[in-house]
Amino acid sequence: MTASQIIEKYIKFFESRDHIRIPNSSLVPENDPTTLFTSSGMQPLVLYLLGGKHPAGKRLVNVQNCFRAQDIEEIGDNRHTTFFRMLGNWSLGKPASQKTTSRGGYFKAEQIPWLWEFLTDRLKLPVEKLYVTIFNGFNDIEKDNESYEIWKEIFEKAGLDAREKISFYGVDKNWWSRAGLPQNMPAGEPGGPDTEIFFDFETEHDKKFGQKCHTNCDCGRYLEIGNSVFMQYQKKSDGSFVELPQKNVDFGGGLERLLAATENQNDIFQTSLLSPVIKTIEKITRKTYDENKEKIRIIADHFVASSFIISAGVIPSNKEQGYILRRLLRRSLDSLFQLESSDISPIIKIIVEQYKNTDGKLAKDFEKIKNVILEEQQSYNQTQKKAKEFMHKKYPPLPAGPLRSEASRKVGDELMGISKISAEDAFILYSTHGLSPSQIKSLGYTFDDRAFANKMEEHQKLSREGAAQKFAGGLADTNTQTIMGHTATHLLHQAIRDVLGDHIHQAGSNITSQRVRFDFNYDKALTEEEVKKIEEIINKKIKENLPVHFEMLPLEKAKDIGAIGLFDEKYEDNVKVYFIGGSTSSPQEAYSKEFCGGPHVNFTGELKRFTIFKQENLGRGLRRIYANV
Ligand code: SER
Image (cartoon, rainbow, N blue to C red; front, side):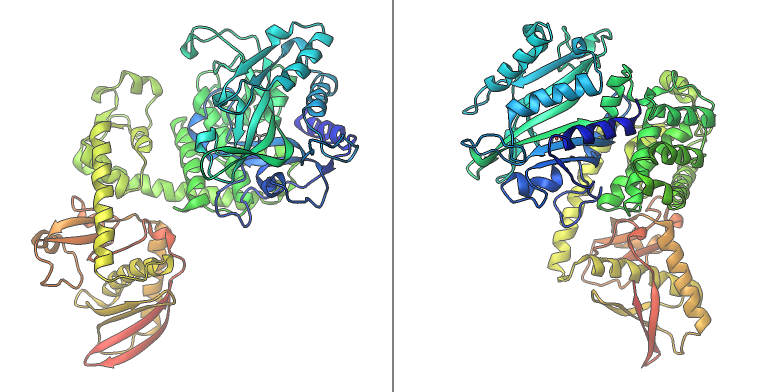
């Protein structure tokens, strides 16, 4: 049975029980600033679960594309994926007094037997392989005996021992809300107990996960394939729970997991949906899945997720969805690189092929997806190249270059291609070159993690102080556009010097959210060609996505390394110097070093296009430029 056939059977099953199919919502939620991605089928339905009237009625069914950024670090095992499709069905409220009617809301007595029928009759999952868990109670919220009675009858009818099949767990396992545990839920959030259904692969228990295996054990033997949340409570601002005016059912089942169960394949990545992707990765890397499971799973999962995210209109950046996309891409490119390949096109092609029956837009967006990933690959290569150049100046080159096998890394010392570097340098790679600690390690460097964490804390403290100072300095207008304007001014200052000569210096500036104004010593009009050159340099620097950071330096040192800017006598000992690229230890690497209070963007890529739209003669040998960014 293919993934598309499961979808078809599922929709049909619930449509024949009077559910109306609702469309898949965008992966990037519209009009919901509280969350970056759609991570469950119920997310677009919260208003209706709280009591709003849904135009399609009380019984809904759909397939929702979901992405869970919080699972990024989990990827590598046999069952987690950041992107998945959730089969959902909902009953939007059954008033306690009302009997179930064909189009009305329903509750446990209907939903649990339907789910069982779908799994065992339509998907033909063997009954003896299914197990369930039920909520054991928490504070004033009772143990779910009602679900127990329903499940008991079902198992007994199937000739199975209910005591073996049903287990009770507390809030940590059998309570569901978008925020997780009851104590983590914000006021107003709906949630409730759930009953979960598991498929038993009968694999051996791994004692790493506890002495004894059990239904909700993490060892991988049992896979959760569905979750019926009885969404009937809402958190109040005093921390207590009230019953919602309506009792809802919110069922969600991961399609990829249901497919794994129907194929009795305990590795999601080996199912008919994802195994062609794995095979393609094996082919282009010429490495076997068996020996490189974790890396190949990361590549497969992250490329699938990235393809869907790019298709939803996101591009890599250092903010919000763009930042998550960048993280996914860089993690997967790291793994691909470690397997000595960089050929991304066949991977995207096979992903598009595997999902085209259900997600045709992916195929239409193939070129776009490919180009966005290629661009990110280039920008990441650039970042890594700069980082390596910086490191090679300080440390002897690594014997085997950056590509070392996992085995050599495990033996791990200088001889085997690992170089121990100082936490300071690791921090420069992080703050100046934009590499995460794990990316630095994947380049073959080790460092003292604790000392690195201390550096990070110190840096954050400085940033906070910097922010306070900036406030005291009267930089009142700090919206994103103005912050971008500040960084653009530094780029402009340097670019003007590149084009007109080093005798040019800033005579003043003024930044609003509409434009950047910049004054400098020059007594004639800039030619069209000069204007074009300046714009080109700046736009190139934006494209290079250079990291921007500051360092507090003694005034003399700042002048020594060639920092420019309007130095002011009132700043005595230490001055704040912003670097665009480079740092004090590699000042020649920096494109711009300028004395400034800030604030600035973190990476030049956050700026849009830089254009000069006007210039004026101010007299007294001064010129003024206006620009947009
Ligand atoms: N909201 C629940 C989940 O995400 C069931 O749909 O698991």
